Each structure stands twice: as structure tokens, then as C-alpha cells.
Image (cartoon, rainbow, N blue to C red; front, side, top):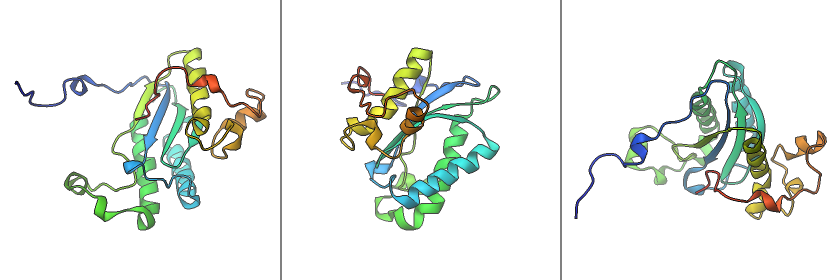
Length: 192
């Protein structure tokens, strides 16, 4: 049996998208899928972190859903900018600083996490996908809004309060009772 040494063969070639002005879909997950993202103080911290980040690193929020242990969103960056990683770093750091007193769990810290001075709020990375065209945009927007139904948190997208779905209903894009059973066609959209 031959052992492969070094980095994982598929991850060594992985490159994040870096299209300036691109639209991106993201999945961000809590550490060990802990369920705290919908808690009021975390929602407030997240909202403040996003607002603060957008002052110096603007982006348009095209879609968003917040679930207890993960979130999905879609952003469009300014025409001269592709630095979504900087934005996520700022957002995650700010939420961690505001919520660490109540959510950080020292007993969950690995040696690697301690060495990197990380917290137990977030998984280290996030998943991103660059939106390719209008169909891809619509599919990911449907997926975002369908996610609370998929995970059993609501029977229709409109029943879930922490989503941009309500903004799209007000604009006449979705009907209020939309559940989008067909949205879950193929692909996992970055969900583990």
C-alpha cells in the first residue's frame, strides 16, 4: 500500500473565484453545527457586523437566509473588487468578538484552533460559488429561500422570518405561499 504524503491531491489545486464585481453564493456554518445563529443577540451582532463591513467593503445582498446552524447568502461585489474573503473575515471576527462571552466553548478548542487563536463559533472556512448566469442566479436564490423548508423549520418559505424571501414577496417576485418543492433539484449548494 502506498501512502500519499503532502496536501490532499484535490485541495492542492483548489482556487477560490476572484472575479471582480462578481455575484457569489456562500454557505457559512457554525463550528460543529452548533445551533445559535437565530438567537436574538447573535442576529443583532451579525447585522451590526454586516453593516460595519459594508461601510469600508461594500456589497449588495441579493439573498440571505439564516438558520440555527448555518446561513446561505448571495452577494454582488463592486465592479473593481473580488475580496469576499476579507468581508467574511471581518464579519465572522466581529460576531465572534460580540458573542464570545456567551458562545465560546474552551473545551471544544483543538490545539490547531488554539495555535491560530480561533473561536468555537464558526467553521474555519466557507463555501462559495460564483454565479454564472441568470438561471444560476435564480436557482441559487430559490435554494436560499427554500432552505428553511428543506431543513424542516417551516412548511413554506414565508413562514421563516430570517430570510430575504419577504423582500422578494413585497417586490412581487415570489407568491407569499411559495414553498418551492422543486427548488431542491440537484446539487448540495455547499451543504455538508
